[in-house]
Length: 537
Image (cartoon, rainbow, N blue to C red; front, side, top):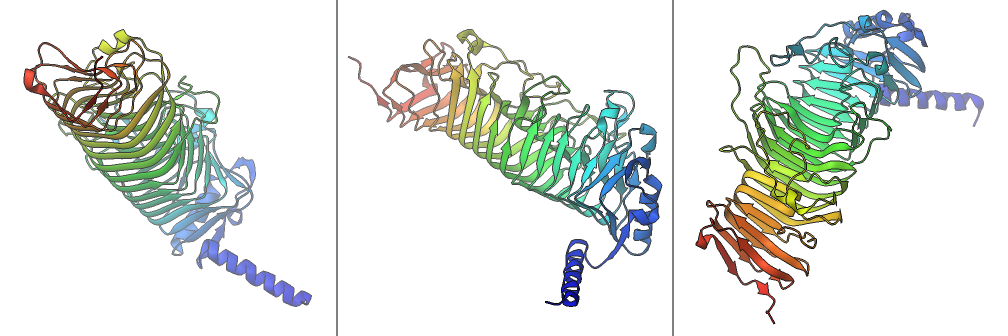
């Protein structure tokens, strides 16, 4: 090939590549507007000039080439794409004065403050916007290490926007939440990498009462919550799919709540990994993630139709925490205190968790307000264990108005799962293990109605309490269980309200006593049918 033909071919290749990356729209290089890539010169005005010029000409791409670009708050505009070169670093200013408090949509009456405030990239009422490229956005959050008082800047805050794409970008060191998408429609976040361990409230990704959201292929490593759905409003967060992600957090890896004014509807999360953070020290002082999966309705709202599957996790204190409470915060002015919400129709399946703490998992509603229709299937959980028998008799407080957290009840009377105020609960092929002998129950159910336990596999330690304790339960069906040889008691049934408890087709050949019932339990409350029981010598 001649030199001329070679250069023509090379030029065509570059043109095709540019069109594929940026599309056919105009490209606006921030250098052409006076921005300097030295990491020292504040470039807020020239960057904004490039964005404004792009928007007035009908949209296009604002391009950040290789270099370090220092900026304060910049305003994204409709039809504008911010594109970051792979060797580009967009630096947030270390001076809080460079972040404009332009948006104030979300006033929390209980806190008397705003959840939006200052951010590096912001926008409201926009459409067809994107932030993409393999470059880095670094908020230099270590400059804002105060816990209360002045607001700390986020990196991205977008409100009331539609058709939003955030793709492939690396994000580091925000002053608070890394990114906050509020009341947005058709939001896609894919292939991003987040590392957020510089100050307080360092969440990884917050979706706040958005609709039609697709999150995929992301890696979020944060001090606070990693993947967090919220509803700082009376409207729900709905139609969300999250897949093929890796989450690390010193707090909650996957969370719906704590703010839950409108609730969460139509949510699927699948094929994700939860692992310990890479950063060696937690800002909040906890060196282990609090919860793997946390589903919380505490401020009114409805959590309905949530399916979470194919999750593996390691090194969190509490693998599963499901909570219906009554903190009842108000997220909009002049509204009455919200009533107790609803939490229902949840499916958790194909979940493996190892190296969990001795606390145990919990599924807890409130008296008169049960959690409804929760199914756990193909679950394998391994805990630290090591507690003594007297902990099995612990009375767990209701704490209706408390902040919801996996450790809120302390060490539970069950090393596996503690369930209270639940209607419609299924445990199918659930395996519970402990690294050390534990004399608590594997499963405790209090005020639970309409429950199926199928093929529960749980160890028994010498001298331990019964594998399962049930108190004031109704319509319980237990089948297909095969307790280990040497188990002293399988079931301890308590409470005058208990009734319609059936043990069917279980292998109790290794059990000394199948069931122990307390004196106040009605005589007809327990039935045993077609179980295999070892003959006494």
